[in-house]
Image (tube, rainbow, N blue to C red; front, side):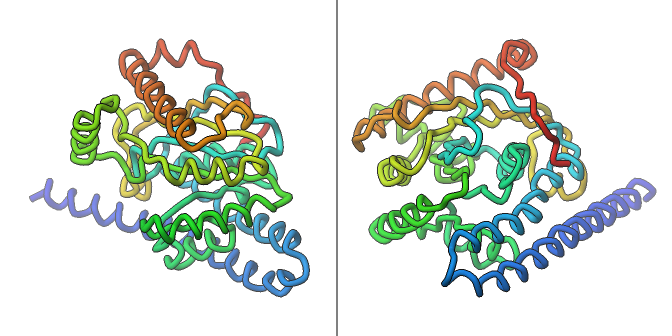
Length: 311
């Protein structure tokens, strides 16, 4: 009975912490949303001014991703590899293995300094923008939204890419080419698909989807500076949102980055598909190396020396 009572108390505590954290983050987001709504009055006259105001307000909210992962959740964040030049417009392709990857991405971007993390963008399902506070925020920050219907998505993405590309502000546009979060069931389906079609069978990743990547890379070729190949790797217990909200993340979040200037990427669609396929094969091999001996692997990597800590 004592053990059962302690279990109930622990669940109540976790529930309280989760609600309290969501209240803090939601409150900050609601204030930022109201500011963005008021800023709409300048949009017809000066889009750059509206973007600057919205990005500044967005930074105040998106810093919550780093707060949730690190300060609240207790996860240590470290970045390794190559950095993009300052004030760059960048497309980021990254693996998707947990439901806190977004927070890890914001931990990285928040350390870039102004106008980040408000300069963070992503390609996401259109249902996201209808979520109160967070969804509204992503809409004002010019995230790109898709319906998973390529005939309509390619028209929408092309329009959104051209609009974002016209921005005078630097940005990091994040794309998860796997299209979904990796689970054992999804990985088994992905491997079966690769075997049937003669593609490389990946052990640690899902086989990437090409359409959004090739469209963005071709449409924004003259508007972005480069592409970052980013790889998430977590040490310790596998993270999830419930653990993050209840302050029980017992892990380290590592991100390994390789920067490619846009002129190093091919221009044609078929060649871009091959580039992404090869990138994913290399990423899978890199994760193999990480899993064999994490301490030895990271001791050989260049660790980022951040000029500032957002938290």
